[in-house]
Amino acid sequence: MTRPRPRPVPTRPPGRTDHRRTDPRRPAATTAARPPTRPLRTPPQPPPHPTELFTERLLLVLSGQKPVHWAARHIAHTAFDDLTRLAELAPLNVNGRRPTIHRIGHYEPRPGVYEVFARIGTGPALRALAFRLHLGEDQRWRCTAVEVGAPPP
Image 1 (cartoon, rainbow, N blue to C red):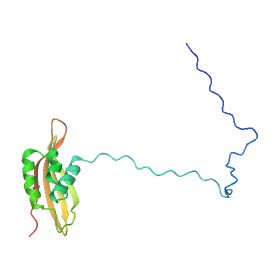
Image 2 (cartoon, rainbow, N blue to C red; image 1 turned 45 degrees about the horizontal axis):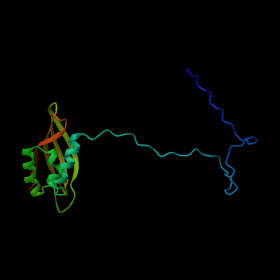
Image 3 (cartoon, helix red, strand yellow; image 1 turned 180 degrees about the horizontal axis):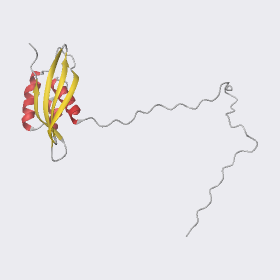
Image 4 (tube, one colour; image 1 turned 90 degrees about the vertical axis):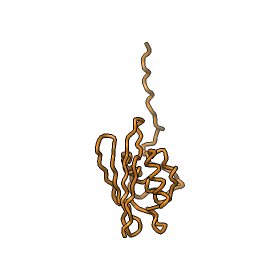
């Protein structure tokens, strides 16, 4: 069995008791030394809720900013057909302005299923977006239904 060796004691150069910087190329500081400031760290944020992620995905597709196949792996078969039909109409693209999400809400009829509704600002009007999410056996969320409210008359 070996014994731990004692740690060496650090030694300072002899004759120097002032530990402040003495660089002749720099002027001496006239004020008291301030501790260095560290950048503020933001606390880690929780991951976004699946309803928020899917609202943004559907918004990008329905406004014509992304193609339908961009979200294909997150959409179930029948909902993909509905989304393709809706995307051709570009219901959330008004005068080339980007739509904005005003509010997202959801209802959970049973565990692993969300019915989501969102208010989308399209220019001067608000539109409704509704969709349903199912949690698959592979623990991935998939959209199974999509609807967009008709524009106001």
